[in-house]
Length: 396
Figure (cartoon, rainbow, N blue to C red):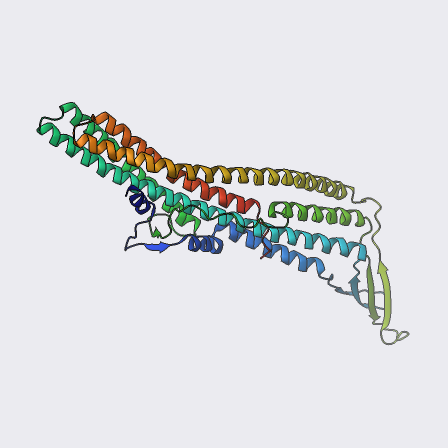
């Protein structure tokens, strides 16, 4: 019977003035309106624009001049050329940065999903604690009335009544604190979903049940490592481009000259030329050094990302295994604590045990219930953490 009551406590209560929201709906809202996803989406769009800019050909320029010397009118078209050894690294670096932005966008989506799921779990746990605290406060009031009746009947002392009253007051304060904690957790969930966090607008529709078993582990490179690898590729392209920029791109000039007042040169005279920058005073050494340093930094960040990813995956596996074991153990302990508390309460009603024994048994049962709720939440968090550190989802 006590386990049925616990199931009711773990199930969210529906309120007519609030909108029910499931875990899946909370995740969908966070992915659609979450601030970190929006920022990553704009970064991805900017990276795609950079690829288009890198692939664009340089625009020609036209100049028109007048001189007093013959011929007087000059029209020149300047057509810049794009060296292949400059264009290739420039486009390759932009493509690598775009790939990194897409991987970062996928990673931010995974992190946003993790944040929404863990926040939803915390809200469920806080709501469960609030309902359990309220039920404990009601049970304490019942015990206080029982102690009062026994005192009036001469079966208990005034000390029992005072002790029961203190216990009831403490549990009432605990219930008030847990109610505020449940509201704060719900407001945090609303903010993660992109909703205002000034007042409670939602009611949790899912229950705090044990998480499902892990599925097949994803195959591929974790997103955190994929981002670091793309940054390394982009830095290598940037270094190649900096080294190749020692010889800037030339330009071809074609034009027309006209305006000979003597008539010796009638019509327009064609002109052609080439402009070739000479790297006499600047061999791009500063840009090359900076690009090399950025390449070395990206390589170090990749090594760090691989170590951190391996450690995070191992830690997530351990946490999930430990959390599942604690939940299974809590279920066994919970049944024993509930039965002991019920027996002590019945024995106190018959005058077989003292009130402190009843309070101790009820305290043990409350602690078992609270640990069960916390361990369920920890199991969900561990499962979510494992999914986010092993995420290899396709780029959106």
